[in-house]
Image (cartoon, rainbow, N blue to C red; front, side, top):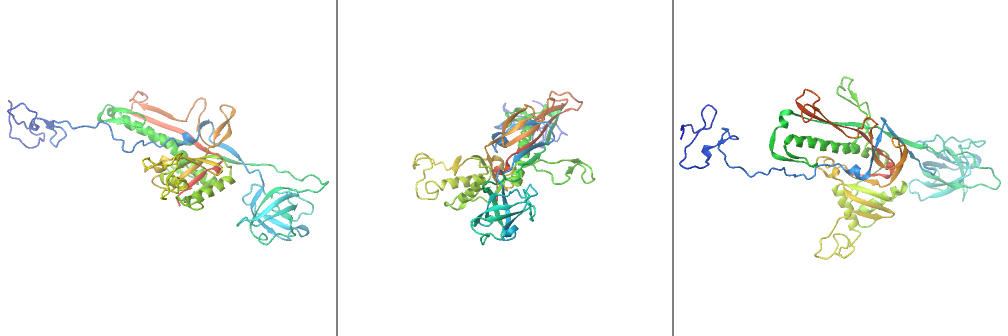
Length: 500
């Protein structure tokens, strides 16, 4: 039956393993070595109940998909993408000061602030008619005829390039409330007498030009050759369908998924460098310079509309509905695109649901029966308090949750952004590769590509493991690269919801 020792302590390696004889043929703890125990023997003979697959406790962890819903991708061959946007058709100024008796022959004079204007002189001509209103309320208004203007340089003109001489229609001077206060003004037509010459001067339209430059995104994963042959007891399971018992497959797959999310997150979050931004030796004066790029949030904050502190449900005329009506009034001043998409975080999405729900059935807290659907809700029914779309005024809005704003490992940490409103319109652009005009959404991605190089999404393997035999390195290196930028056209139609 073999040797019996008195060594009953743990196996330290200095003595043979303890073997205890038994009168019956049984699998006992004393007769097996437990390799995981302190003595590294196998005395634990019972196999535990294993759940081989990982539990996906965070659900689908990927965040990309937003840009695929609202935009498109198209190639570019340059270090910079440049586009132009139309200016407004009609002539208006938001900072003018009328003064009675300051113009020629006792007429009134209007001084125009050209600080934010593209032109160096006022674009109002003699013979045109203007409407002047106080800037504070816009309620006090008066119409006047332009009798002299620097645009056509009339004889005897004594004013500056930012002045026009006018005479009100209903009285000799401007009414009290407009004289010497800050006002707004716009041109609404012209008024000429019989047998007069044509209007002097012509207005040349100009455009506003914008640009953006692509950024280079990279990532890398590496594993040595020995570990690629190591089989684990946990089965790999990832969002892209990768499976098996080789753990490095999970590592490589998650690196790829993370890089996919970075491609979208950079288009949303990136911003232009405001100074000489360098890395890798910046303190010594050297290093590599990066320019940054204008992402979605940055573009809306600089060229679009920002609304802070959207409130929850309330009665009509106050609270969320009044807040939203203020947004509609701003959209009326811009492109007035009828269909828009709302991408919101959870709290703001619920605010919109509360706002819409408060308009039907007396609200959630009312004793009136709720009837948000086609039929009256019954006691046995499961009520639906969520809304995917609604119409207000002449606008249609489609609402959805944006996972990026809710995830605790991304924007869910900061809570500074509540959501964005993106117009569903399109614009015509010229495609260099196709050589024709094509229609693209206001929001689209440009990536670097040519006939020989496509940098939209590059992935390659180097080393001597995993099918690649490019070097003597006993490892597999997986490389990821993309070069792209986001083009946000007509940002004046976008709205960024920010926390108060």
